[in-house]
Length: 177
Image (cartoon, rainbow, N blue to C red; front, side, top):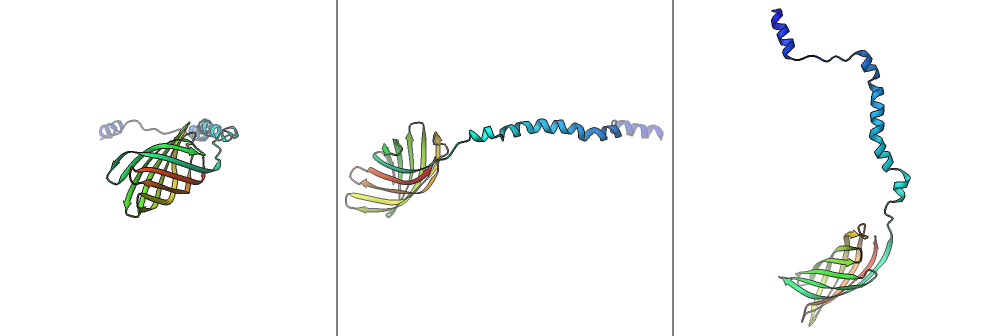
C-alpha cells in the first residue's frame, strides 16, 4: 500500500511550499517591479508632455467652392473644383439627390498640409435651370495639420446649374482645428 501512495505522490509532481521567509519578503520584491512598470506612465504624464499636446483653436470658416461634374451615378453627382476663403484648396463633393426636395453630400477639401471631410444634409429646390440647396454640414474628420478638426451646424448652401450640373457651394460657421 505504501508503494502505491508513493507512486501517486510522484505522479502528481513535486509540491511547492514557499517558506515563511519568502512570504514575508514577497511584498518587498513587488515594490521595485511596480516602480519599473509605472516609470513609462509617469513619464508620459509629465508637464513637458502636456505642454506639447495639440492646442485646439476655434475660428470662423467661410469657404466658396466652384465645381464641375466629373461623373454621375444615378442621382449622385461627383464634382471637383477649387475652394477659396479661410481654407483654400481642391474640393470634391458627392452630392446625392435623395428625393425631389432633399440632398445629402460628402465634402472633401484638400488644403495645403492636410484634408477635411464633412457630411451635409440640405433641402433641395429645383426651379427652372437652377436648383438651390440650403442646410447644415458637420466636419467629421481631418488629416495632417487638420487632424483634430471638428465642427457642426455649419451653413451649407449652394446652387446646381441643371444644364451642365456645375455646383457652387458655400460653407460658413465656426470650427476647431
